[in-house]
Figure 1 (tube, chains in turn red, cyan):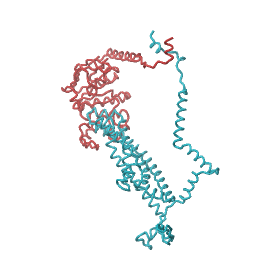
Figure 2: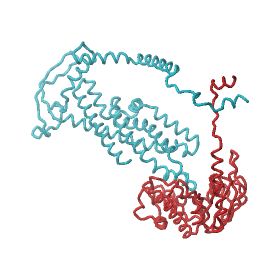
Figure 3: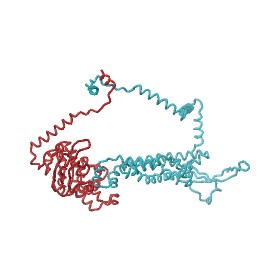
Figure 4: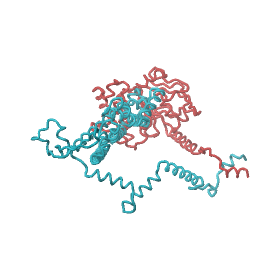
Length: 271
Length: 335
């Protein structure tokens, strides 16, 4: 249902973040994007959301070509779970979830925070699906723990019944137990709502555990594409190796700032 | 080897430049700052203020004589005891039932002095006065209440003006850069008009009374509030706004759900501060005839009734303290 057709992206500073990626996602797939930082995961994801425009290539969602014109319409069938969540801290849990259907809500009703009962019921259903209780409904989002906030973000993402959910490092700041249960919630929610999920992760073991399909990126190119069972130890080792190399390469890069030469230096230089 | 690479070569730590806290530049700067301060201080008679004040302090402990201290004691002698009672000539009152006087009030005999312009002399006449022990205090309290109401309505109208202007003056929610500039300019225009001067004009237009005062407060403080509102909107965290707008919500909805919840506590704090400030300013506005307790203060001051003035000042002081107490409590609750 989501097709990347020879998609590339070159940033203005010359970095080629994504190089000629062609991938086709199937309906209802839980697809994990793996890869070292700087591999182009986030760029690929933001291109679907319209935050980044592809330099070349086509992105087709449900048979519709993504263009500037139909971006707003497509945005309504795509939800995003951000790494920093971006919940509204001082808004109640219920209203944070309800902001998921804000684009569809009537203007005046939404201005006074009045949402149809039907939408409230849907929010309750989603919240209980991700494991939150009635007592949490009227608490401020900032009063919840990190894991609970992540669940609220998941519920918000599914509120508008999206066809596609993009999750950018959804468990980056959680401990392993919490991460597992949050990913579980995400997967269950996706299955019950029949949504396709494209999720970036940097933990290999979670990817192997939860993904229906793993797409590993390296330097903007598809490095591996297949089910977790096909991801053998050799592929994993090579991916980690790359990560290691990359880290060293990053550290080795000189970060010297141009400084104004001191008078002493010039004297020295002349002598 | 070229020059640049030699300059950028790493030096041994012993050759690193040391940091100096005080340099000749600092001393030169301090010298000029001192000269400027001295000049400006002389312009504003700060030197004379220091001399006179020290004289007053010395005179207070019995050394020498001071005009300042004499002035203070002259006011003090006339201001105390402060006046709570109201004394009105009976003949000027209508429909007073001498059998049923108001509570605690009594009739006193006294002398009424009247000035005759034609003969340039004072005529004295026996007269009866109705004395109400806390009559004047009641009057002042009522006027203080009126002053507080003026502050309240001034704040209300200023919120009504500044809320839309504040949103239009927030760079990220203004519909157009030109609208943004106009809104910002309008707000600074409001801010740049001092209440007292605006009140002078409004008294000309609307006549004496609280209308002029309320509008003067509203005009000035809407400029201040609008700027606060706009700055607060601009500084709200971008993440939640981005999350909602990338899901397709329009900017008013984003404003309502991602910005307002965040800025509300700060806005309430600003509004509280402006309300408090408006009440304090409203006490002064009466001096130009714009209603409130200041009108009474000015009238009594011009009649040299310093004991009445002292009552007014006491009530203003108590009001401000009580107000501060309550607004502090409210602030602790809302934040």
